[in-house]
Amino acid sequence: MSIQIFQGDSIKYMKNILTESVDLIIADPPYNLGKDYGNNNDQRTHDEYIEFSKQWIKEAHRILKGTGSIYIFMGVRFISYLYTILEQEYNFIFNSWITWHYTQGLGKTKGFSPRHDDILFFNKS
Image (cartoon, rainbow, N blue to C red):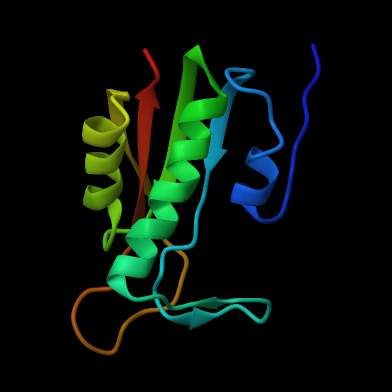
């Protein structure tokens, strides 16, 4: 068995991967929170972010085998949109909504500080 890990622009890399050749995708896309990470700016308009998400999900669907699975890490702001895209536009089958609870991180000065990320787990068929 061969395992390959790619780091970089996901859409660029996935376009070079054979159709239905991948068993598992673990995606941790930008959360679009307006943070500057030093190498990119995580600040797109709502529509730009949804279009970006549709582009990489389209490629993920194409390269994933019929028996494949996808895990997507996402913050609260866009998780419901990704769920809808996966289920309604690409007919992925919902498996689980996983909550990753953590205690580290910076607190907010107003309101409650988030202490979890959501992970969507879908199967292609």
